[in-house]
Image (tube, rainbow, N blue to C red):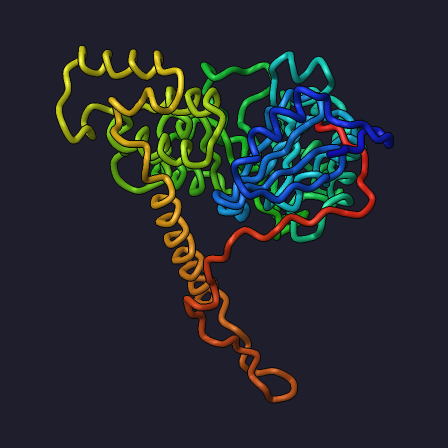
Amino acid sequence: MVLTLSGALRPLTEPSLMLIEEWIVSCPSIILNRHSLTVVTLAETGVISFFHPKGQGKPVFTCHPIEKPYLIYQIGSADPKLAAQAAATVCQDVSGIDLNCGCPKPFSTTGGMGAALLSTPDLLCDILKAIRAAVPPEVSVSCKIRLMPTEEETLELVRKIVTTGAIRCLTVHCRTRTMRMSHRAEVERLTSIVKLCRELDPELAVIQNGDCVSREAAVKVRELTGCDSVMIATAAESNLSCFREGPLADANTELIPKYVRLASYFGNAWGNSKHCFSQFKSPASVAPVRTTKDEKKNFRERLSQAKYYPDLVPLIGALEGGKEFLDELNVLLAEREVQGRLIHLVKNPPNHDSVDGKSDAPAPVTDSEFPILPPEPLQSSDQPVPVAVA
């Protein structure tokens, strides 16, 4: 198993190679070299894992084909070449590439990445153009920024970004670089940004971020600013059901059991899974069975003490059921795809009066047009390109 790194052939280190081979030997797999990474697709689950030569056998990124239509891969970078190479590495398995221009944390800004790019707009735009040139046209390119101190500075930055022609979506975190979560998001400032974007590129999607915690709140933000959509981050980490109408799902009896069973079936890294489900919360009003404070405390303590998936069986029951849940998701997503196409046809009726007298109306949409297909084998180029994920 040989990888290409910086133009030179370099084998995986022995410990890394042994760990990867031990992991995949019991499962039929597709193994490819994509740029400088080894990409492994497990036949049973469809999980796609990217391994780096220095990763000591741990994947640096994993995804699944069911996510692809909805998965945006965000890159932190201050180097157009590296950003383009990173985007090219994963673009077969995601729907879009986003450039992080908003993270204010020192680990990002000290390297010139994240919110530091707000102060170097020419570099920011060069990175976006490099990413756009590196990925196929069907893969969208976007970026997420923060507000500048003044409206004039903000609009000037937005104008620079949009006129590159590189992005199809702009997300605006309605806080400045120096503002933190304790500061109220200045949502009202997005209105002028939306207006400018409509003038520069009517097809560009503008997304608001900051302080939105529910579907109902998102509707109000859209009405206030005219934006196309709203990004929910912190509230979604706390309870994934915040996107749906109605009350939140109960974390202990619904979210955590489903998440754990799916994660266990996929073989998701335990540390990552535990970090995610440990944040799940829900109000007491949605619990199907009334529990005392001591019972809730005991449940959380046992969650934190768990060392691996089997340790959760006494709390959530058997770990089996992940495959069935995945099949259910596939069906629901296919149905939503059909509904979305039908809604699009209603809102955008075809033109029946063509020049040659023939109707260009599409055939009726049926379920058979959207079959649930197995994961497609990944394709790799004959000439790997050196890459470093920024």
